[in-house]
Image 1: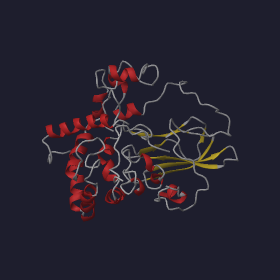
Image 2: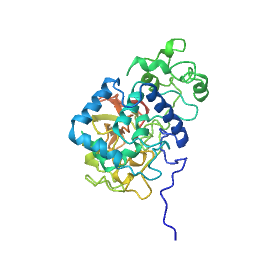
Image 3: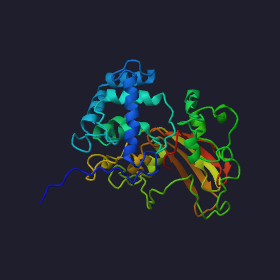
Image 4: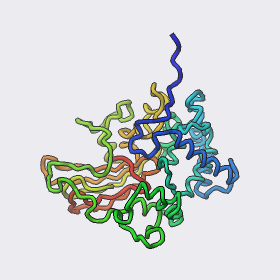
Length: 358
């Protein structure tokens, strides 16, 4: 009987929950090829004219013995056999932190352009997918808005108001609050554009007065339903159980209920951690869309915002809405205050630079 071969590496990944990385690896391959080309045009690797924050990051890695070790090991621990000798885009694997930093420098000074095929909403995540799945990557990433971005808000391709984007986002001016005739339609940054508001009346709330129903807090896909959650649990295990104490004492969307805000809490955390069982010890191979399959795990460790609400319906009582950052879309903003009376559909806050999980 023939020995089993390496894990199959399909072009299409069907479990990219949320769609922030394209399902088709060939789209990512094309995108990353452009980034590598830009890096070479800027002088290749290494380049000592990086953005100051990237230079600072390099100095941090090289001057901290622990970080220097794990930022070598996380690349060395990625297997050198197929398909991991290629990165998640099918290109030659990024095998050292200098190449990683060069790509970061390229990405840092750019806002996402509109792509005909798919949006690469997690550009840094695309670079870190395989290193995130290593023990050293877990150790390293668990270690404790600019007007310039408006250059992509143009009416020419690949601008977000160009012909291609307009066909994907038709009737923009009559759907969102903006200034149609102003430069950049009045948006102050790409983040301002991304967190744009709908015009009044375009998003009616279903069951607004039925307190027996908890609405979805945002447009999303259900990930998990858990019952009998323990106060403390071993959240790093394969089943990724929820650990209530770690979720709420370490962590926008619209209100899913009617009630009163009892407490709000911002909890700093990690950006690029994923469950150890979604890494290379997984017999099916690491999650190519990390941290998509680690959404249970990251509720305990990622940057997050908590809004505790005393619901009008006593059968529900005190509940907590938790906004959890994922990868580079981890900036959470709370827009309500303690003691505030809220209704279904009222804004609780928002994620900046995209949406994550909750």
